[in-house]
Length: 201
Image 1 (spheres, rainbow, N blue to C red):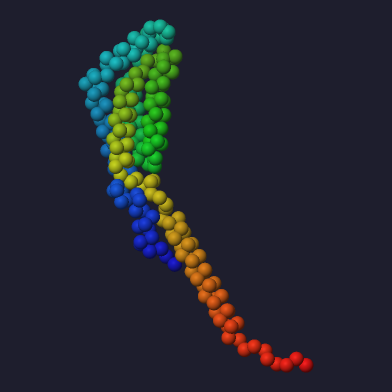
Image 2 (image 1 turned 135 degrees about the vertical axis):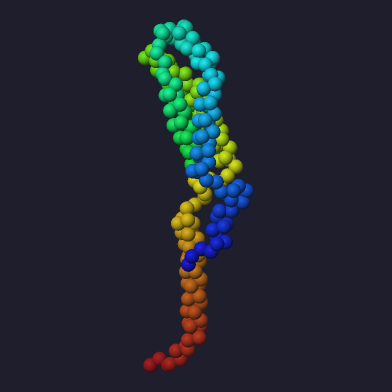
């Protein structure tokens, strides 16, 4: 017996009653593009130069004493921005819990921020400001969208599990009814059976 539309609606009602169903592909592209384009434009405008210079002076002072190091080409920053902004956007939109979405930005931020002092150990200066700003922008956009929509990964059960959850209880209840009716028939047959009135020898 197949589950009716009412059964499926009852399972999905807690998720779809208040929030519209969201998507992953197009919002992920939009959120990633917002973070990447905004960050690259601000980088071309020179908005991050002061922060990068301050960070370099900090590394050259105590206790790091970094020598005059070579810097990574800005093209690497743009490549990292593209990879991380789109990656974080799709990861957030394809995650079903808020605390997991928060963990994504925390882990990504730790990797980006601490990559700079690690490279400094090899006398390679890299400012994580550009990548970090793009990462934050994309995550904020994806997080807001995922909180306002019911994402596909947040659906309660897949369709196959929904069918099993509904078919099995219905089948079980039908079996119980059949057993009860069968028992009633047996009782009725035994009740109306003629008694053996033959005399013993």
